[in-house]
Length: 303
Image (tube, rainbow, N blue to C red; front, side, top):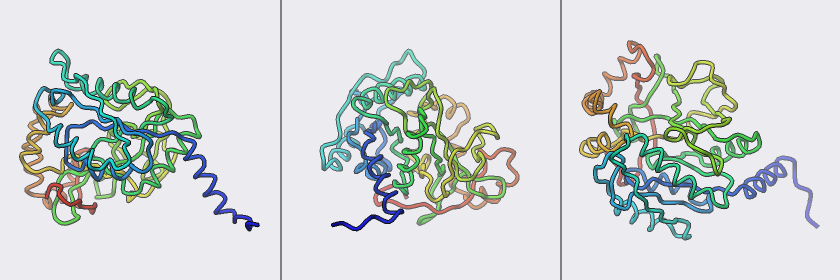
């Protein structure tokens, strides 16, 4: 006869059962090979199916060429359990702005991933979970509260300074700050309105008990707090020079990037990371403030 489980073990088992009852899938926008494998690998064992969405002509939302074949090759090599499902489409529509094309592709991918699912992960391929257990615990809380999306914090990285060291977004005096490019998980069947943004109530997680994101209202609610070390790491602008030039051209935000000459700003900050970090207190807005912080490196990714 088995001995009774201690209370902590019983809670763990009940949580595991709840997690197993949730049917979780994901979609991947297949275009950017940088950080693609570590991004998908982090959650691969925890999802039932992964929809691989890509333009059948290998075009970006702006019409530039993207390395779809290279990305698919990497994903199919990773897919040891046969979870990945190819979902090609025609997502470059020259008559629409790039951001509309972005939202349109995401909606098609979310709809495809919603079949026989409760939740759909919508991480971009340069976003890596350092602690999947913590992320999925927050997803369980979002499920329990009836939320339509899980808004989970990201640490936004700008460029690599050295081994394990990066320029990252911060507050005026170099404290960690979170960014929220959109809910990183959406309830199946959800309607997107702009990029990953969606309608409906959100379960919002931050790295402090109050909002730390400069792009949100100061009084935005925080329902749960995690450590900064557990935030998703967003290697957004961590690229080699030529890859950064391509990203500026193919991004859904390309019109704004080109208008501000974002590449030149990136190049200047990447060339002078310590001066950039020292100037953080002089910036008028957190969105332009950076510190030098630590984050994992991955073999074969930009140095």
